[in-house]
Length: 138
Image (cartoon, rainbow, N blue to C red; front, side):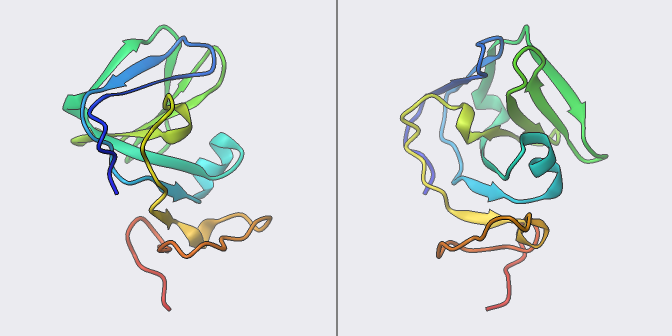
């Protein structure tokens, strides 16, 4: 379920990147794709905010990496925190771990499970998708 909170804040580990979201966040997903795994060291849990609701309040540490033709990934160049996913659309992806608590969010689904690493299992009953939105066969 999307967060009912109308105001969220977050930051990197060293505070060189901070942001505010004035609006709801989408239901979080666990992304098991190889890019997320390689960038973060494990899978990433992300949510999205409408671009119009998202404001950077401190960006001195913000750097972007063009990960593919589709999107770029935002991180802190000072402390290395992985923060954002941006395809230039109406929403900005935010790594849930960078949000200040409480978030009011609950994990809703797993995506790119066909690309997950071999060292862990996904044992919960949440929906699992082969890609971004392709349901896994039952």
